[in-house]
Image (cartoon, rainbow, N blue to C red; front, side):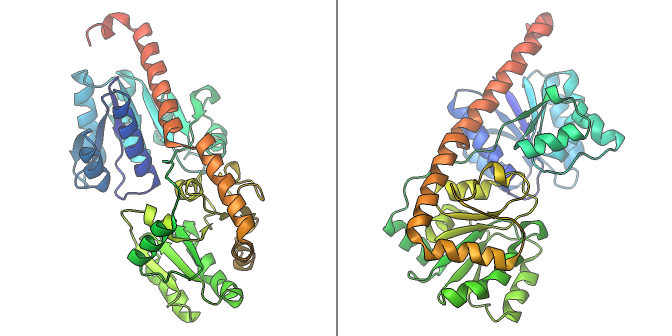
Length: 372
């Protein structure tokens, strides 16, 4: 099978990481996936390093350039199915009229309803399937007027790492400049308003009142970094908040921390949350968006009902104060990811969808497809 994945994201975030995992998984299963991505992007570099055939486009004219590449590949019958991994990619596929030459899939990773603009809706209506990463997202797409029969849920998946040993924890902390004995709360997310890191910074003084040595580790870059750093300074905790920036080997963060905090309020699912759970970490998250589809309060983590620093502080203090309960929740979290949100499951379900759509296309147009 020869699928074409298109992702024109400028940054490397959760959606781009899912694209890379999918491409690697398809290769391992004997398929021949290709990728269109922005030139010099981290996704393009990592996919090329994994052995994927990558077509790069100019950052400035990404949508138009990608549409030409898609049209060319389809005209040469080099690919059998087109998968737009984000909205800009879907625009390019729609401009190329990809849906008239091959099945078109559109991934949807946000909980907001679709724009009601004519062009926006036309793009999604052209898709044979809209793949939502959570039921919350699927409901939003259906509420926008798209046919329910074209919407399906394939949750994101993450690799299942090995157990975190004491040696790994110590090495990770050394590499991040964190004291070995300090209680450490961590969050992995872009530093943007929707991720809610300010809640954690405001919660830290209350946590430190109970655990004076506690530190907060924020991994990720983004436009809010200066504002968050200023907030920590104003609260007198700038030395206790560690901004790690973009960490290429992000497993080090999960290996170093004791508790994972996820204060995002508009998250469709949360691959960073899934990764933390896969590492067996106890997690605290806000009960918004698709998070309650992953975290069951008191069973595999703690849910905070409101985006309130005091409420978050209370949840995190509870996890730090009761290590045996935290260990139980972390173990259950890992089991949840292994059963429902693994990388392998995501690749298998996506691959099966590809095969079904390609087979239907061949059945509908047998003479045309015999030329491929």
